[in-house]
Length: 442
Image (tube, rainbow, N blue to C red):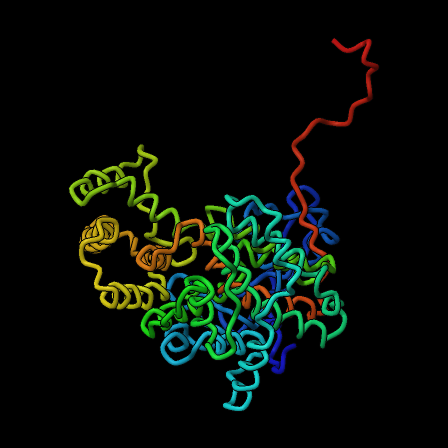
């Protein structure tokens, strides 16, 4: 799908030499440099040259692909999409403009933006037979379970866009996934409530349409609050892509086998469902409920500082960002604008969250360790203020992240150096042994 070409990783004319202390053999591996970030050692010939594999649980020091989409500098709190800082995109773009940027590599012209917006709008409806598919789920099914099932089933309804070797079909599948995900999510929410499905409207923008399908009923008109719509749009932008995280890596690994795009995105949703990934903002609300009241905060701060206590203050710090999460400042402003717009003053859980934020930002322990509130802390508060249940938090994350998954999947498909994913292992099981008849086993 890409309309932009840019330089690939290049050799730095430097090498790393590895010496086998057993055999004395030396092997040399090139160092590659990208546009940003640290150089990497190209170890594709490591096994062939040395007979060794690398061991890297969690792939924390392994680059699995070359990408031109998103760059993160965790030490300095930088997040760039196609070179543009996330702060500028959140301030000056809407979600669909960011979608175009992620998919095509450049910000659209006015005509390109209008054409793209219209194309997405015309794909928001779901095949009508999918209403029967929803009714096959238990009424109390988790919305993420519904999302996994419905998205995976889309290939049975839209088989005219599953040929990954056809660029046009890839484009149609990409547009369909971005456009239909809010409808899928809205219907999952309505189904859990026992309310009628609300169909998308072509006169609303992306965020407005999503809110409409979540909160409207056939009984009366639903008025879109522009402050809330803007907040939702920003939430979607801030979660659109985040480099090679667990769910994105899952989409790429699934896609490397040649699986259709709907199956790949369904796999990404399943990965996102994990509490260590997409469930972080839900964990923030659960933590606040555990704390209970502002009077208990000092005791829980003390517990968080105790190295022997398993309790953690959720929503502070980040695995990637060692300084601050650049999305958090934007989300904080958005959070307070929502609370002000809704005139929320005495809601105990939200009041508790604001007090925890204040204390933690002034506490030397958190400041010295740069444990600042992250994007999940504020997004959970916003969703709570809007009356969105915690079971839907990760669903909203999936709606936003779909475009990132699709952009990464397209890039992987178009990359001639990519192969089917096949990680190696360090085997620690039993040595070879011979089968013993059951009558002779003790």
